Every structure is written in structure tokens, then in C-alpha cells.
Length: 300
Image (cartoon, rainbow, N blue to C red; front, side, top):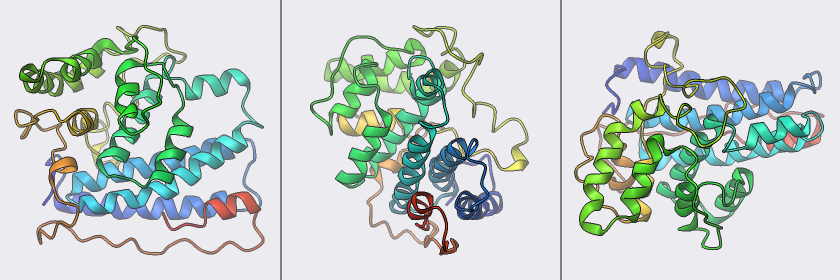
């Protein structure tokens, strides 16, 4: 059953299929000998980004929750390869801006989503370690560092909240007395989407790019038929509820709350939920550049 009713079953089916095809074809393009080395690191990061878009898109479509994690290996491979090649292409300043939570709201949100998906989907330890190494930013944001520390206990936690609008409310929820947590979590979920529209204005630090809202913020309003939209899911609330055991009953039914991430059993067999098996689309590259060919030879 479709979870995000902005799109019909046919809409989601079309764009889920397209997303998988795009990833497979993009990997083949990246492995070609004539790929532009100056653009290749960004292209590889875009491939990684398409993986987490696809996880959220498939959740929106009603796909089985226990199939979402199959995108993590390919995501990590592409991101690691992007970082390795990028060190030879990007300036030090560019590398900082791309990876900084303080200076880059988009990157902060993306990292929050990936941490949230990693924890709610229980990815293996080796994948978690690779993800945290890529994310970095240890000690930069009290909220996200506290969530990471539930699986990485040595994580440094300091006091600053980089984007108090909307995230201070979620921090309040996990640090409040138990009897107040459920209502605060509900208030966060209700204010989350609108709050992101004001996140830059109220940020603790200036942004490196002149942005006013997250890059995906208007995907559901502009060119919806073009397929960029993957949902508007408050993964942040779901992972906080899971790792801090916050009662999320008051959030169930909110259009932005991805309740099935934490409440559907991983061996779900509901016939109304689409069964998923990723098809092998990636060609085996021969005599391609070794690093890229090896890292991108996975099907996901």
C-alpha cells in the first residue's frame, strides 16, 4: 500500500523503476575510461545521493521496509570513491564546505537521514563504521551526536545545536522527563517541515551557499510529474523515538512521520506491500579504471 498519497501507485511504480535504472546506468558511465576526471568525484557523490533518495522513494511507494537497506552498500561505495578522488580535485575549502554540518544545512540533513536509516534498518556493523567515517563532524551538533552515540558510544558530544529551528525541539524531547517526551516529539513532527524552511535564517553559523531552504524542499510542489519527489519523511523523529525509546503514539498518522520504519517487523509479509527484488542491471566493466570499476561493480 502506498505510504505517501501525493503520488498514485502508478506514479511511484514508474519512478521507483526509473530510480533503479538511473543508478545502474550512472555506475556504468562512471566506470568508463573517458569519464571527465574533474567532474567524476561530484558525479559519484550524486550516485550516492540517488541511493538514499531511492530508499525514501521506495518507502513512499509502500515497498517492504526490509528491502531498503540493500541500497547501503552501493551508497557507501560511491561516496567513498567520491571522497578519495575528490581529494585530488577539490580545494581544501571546497572539501570543508562539502562535508561541514555547520556550513551546509543540506549535508547536515542528509547525514541525519542516513544515520536515521542506518539505525532504524539495523545495518551491519561494518557498514555503520564506514558510514560514520564518511559523516565525520564529531562533536559538532549535540542532537545528532547523541543519536550516533547510541551505537557509537565513544562519540564526542558537546552542547551546540547547529540548527535550533526546528531541531532544538527534538533535542528537548529526548532530554525531557519521560512523561513529557511523547508530546514534545509530536510537536517536533508537526513543526518539522515548516521549521526546515526557517532553518537557515536561525542557524548558529552562516551558510557557505546562499540557500533559503533544503534542496529537496519544493520537490513535491514544483515539477512533481518529473519524478524528483521522493517524499517528505521526518526520519529524524523516527530514529530518535527508536534509540531513545520515546513513545511515538501521538505521531502516528502524521503525514511526515515514517512509522513503518520502526514498527513494521522486518519479515513483513503483508500482501498489500510490494515484494522487492532488485534486478541485476549493471554490466561487468572490463579493463576499466580499477578503483571505480571495483567499487561500483555492485548492483546497488
